[in-house]
Length: 343
Image (cartoon, rainbow, N blue to C red; front, side, top):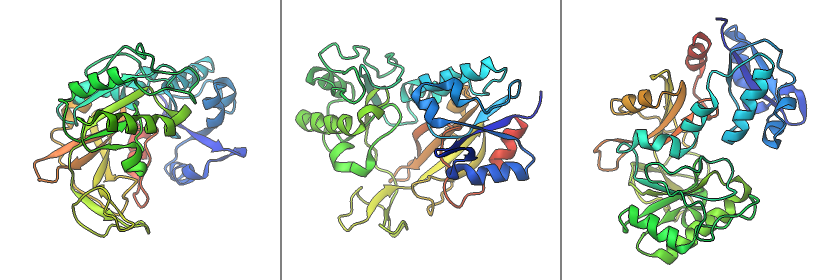
């Protein structure tokens, strides 16, 4: 089988040029003897997958995609459009959804990641919508859910109360969707200090849904808040302190020190800091993470790991598809690209 080629996003204003965010990877690929082609990310999001891949030569591949996140249904259309041209992605659409959306990976990582429940919302992007593990398959039967993305209604009080009960009914929690949180709006649309305060839960969830708007993926997720080792992250982008609360009240923010690990076929090929904290390298313990990564069975995934503040171990904060996971500034991705070229 020929070496994989890479599909990278084109410049939004010039389809013949590479999106500047991926220019460094394209140059490294060239230096390594790799091949890349351009796809139109905007066309993929707009649902015109055939137009998005019309600059990809027919009969080529297999392909790794390295680009911006795509909803799972758009990724499936992307794969289908390439198949029409005789090519295929090395990550299948089901594999992409499993790694990209929390309901796809949570059951495998349960026990190694904070306890979670999720509430599918009608009209909320391309989330799986299926109840597994902590899911609720009612999908808006209580009058929640919208139809047009921008007008999605948050879960009703009965669904929220049932979800809170499944998390034990008390303690702090985080609100997110199947893919993203809004940690920059920490107190407004992310952090719930006490689950027993159901009106406060409802306020945070409603604000989160409002701010996500048409970009809300799948539904709402409630995750147990766990305290991790943190540093003060100042406004100038440098770490300046030790552990503490998420908001230090001094213009800086206390953020968990996370490591991002890239896995190919169940083996770690690159370890670095999280892109939000590129100046905070760490050395995570991977012994408890390798088994669930292998069980998940996805070819290229990332795990974001953080150490508990009491030093009792490392936890999986997030799992993602490695094709759309951001590389932090200052890290050399050559080892990852070499492994992908040889896959």
